Length: 141
Image 1 (cartoon, rainbow, N blue to C red):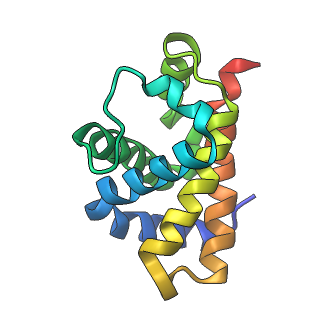
Image 2 (cartoon, rainbow, N blue to C red):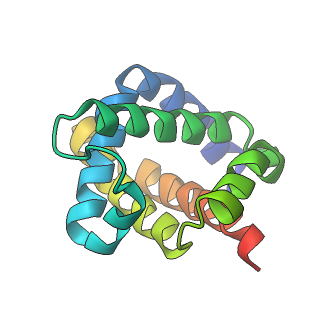
């Protein structure tokens, strides 16, 4: 799946992105809510309007979980075990939303990183986020 070079690149990049976690995560969430309005149903108890504290807080949690996964790529299933259980059994999130969010995250990263979001990074990030979404959806099988 990911080469050693891609894994190192992802670890480095996610380490640099965590200071802006809440902004990147909020941007990706807003994009998902706009492009896939059905995904909002899981957030009906929160204020997810642009600029809201809930949006920034949840966006930060998501980005931090992704960054943690990037630091433990070879043990992604173990790293995400508690999130798998939470999303599958407690929150009962439609697993298609993980893929939708991954697509929106790629766009948010491209906007945030500008020219630093190279073709090589884009490809590595797409592979990683696809794997991340697949691991989150494993409990649904």
